[in-house]
Image (tube, rainbow, N blue to C red; front, side, top):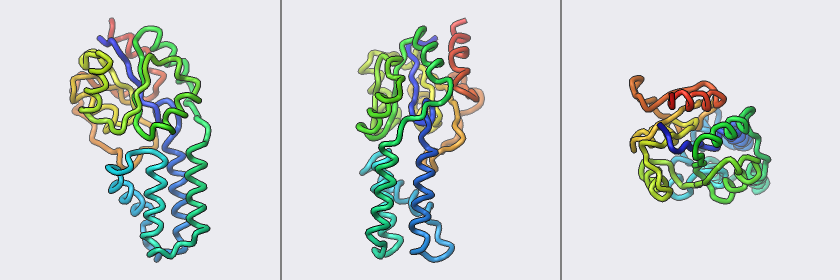
Length: 233
């Protein structure tokens, strides 16, 4: 049924969003003394991120720029340089932290790549995502790695065409309905949804109809190899 199986990276192969939550909470702590009680600091940060996606894209650097902007806006420019430096230190720590691969992922990729052409498709900052791929110890499982600015039907179509992949023979595995599943279904591919317990507010989306025969939800990535084999039966 499938010629190619692709995996998302962040929160599919390794931890990501929990670190964003850590530095979001740090941002709230830094800003709290500056704002009136009842101010939703995190909501203001997320709104700033949403408005900046077109200009900054995704990832830690985008988060850092939005955090600096939100800090200045929320405090009417009164935030101390030392507190801005604290936010920047957090961004640097986030960018340089080691990759923490989910348990069992290496075995899953080994099993899948032994039977299928296997690729990685992830979005975000090129330098940061490349570093994570290269230091994860997983890159040898992939025939190709694609780091994109956005994950939408147009992007997937372009990637698959460039790699001579038939969308109807393509399966994407990921934790985001919005980024990994719905765009692939839209171009005729298959989607395997493996949810992670933390999801970025801007990544929420409705699940496809239950009768969609090109979509499946699995509770853990460890079940992916067996499911793929079953599709060949």
